[in-house]
Image (tube, rainbow, N blue to C red; front, side):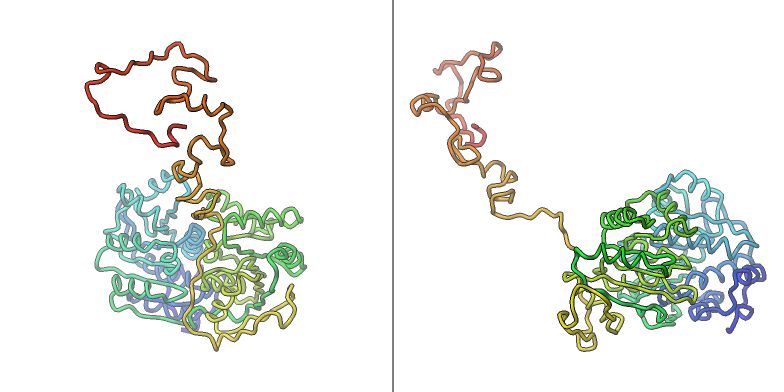
Length: 494
């Protein structure tokens, strides 16, 4: 299949594709479209930015164009699952663009917005539902949507959905689908969990791999700068002030870090916006719209957006912080060099991030060239990824705010801290500095009967309390029981 005329697409779909200026299909499209049109299960592996969305949307729309039956209420004919809101919205945009001449009924289902409009759309019955797993399960539990009439299901970026913890939800969703169906799994990497999922829910899938797994697009110019952490802000400002910056995405590891970096760039006069999971859907859409129309030149994002941003014209990607999962690096830099264009990816690496860099270089199979930095040549230890072990290490994200336990004096459990239930306080009325707080003479201090509370029968400030009950005399009529009173611990007596 050298061009889309040979792909067997329906005439309205082919017309929309040509209007978009597409002539020759990409490798993943050449392989997936014929097999998907034939109704086969597909396990497709292709790096990000290679046209996977059109690979499954075009044959799906062709099937709808050839069979225009109306779906029943609360059902859908095709289901597309995506890991993030942004990716779900972009898939929906592709469906509307390629299907503009057949007008398929669609709905985008994700969290962060009111469920009412989504439920009303589902109640009519739809051709295609594009959803994130969490919100889809919510509507399934209330009867808003039933999957017993769904004949095609597509899992886009399946590996990221598993990374985000959606594996149980995906299994529950696939378990509600008819046994006779077409299941398409598309992913950028092939971890063991994807293989396991394919064995569970696919029947003799056609495995398609069009590029080496996790290899960045060759048109991306990659480099790394070795800096002290204190120098990163100045270096980032210098990079983003260059004239050749068209659109740039800056990646951080944390949501708070994204907000801090965006605020610093704004103070430096560089228009930017932060996008991450704590932002509302309206804020995320406003930031993406501004980034698309050029009013915002720089987008600061966490890894949740690494596969959810499909915007042409991103000239630069800057890794302000290297990811602790090496595959995320491939997805981050894949935001540039899209649609056949070239791009630049610059990583800022401090001393604590060297293990992350080594894992990344081992994954992509080559050393990333180094640019200007704080460290002179020769200070950085020589590293050759070919001589390292092939097994990748996973580094846990630093937990800077986690409370640490210990036996020292500040607040450790089991020691002198508050969490020890007062055990760390000095007994016998000792104060914070370990000295006795009583100013009375020893004889006066020892005149209080054992077990009696200080200031008994007195109100605040040691004044007499008019409502206090008179002390009972000890004697045989005081109590019917001769059991001794339980002594209170020293902390309670205080």
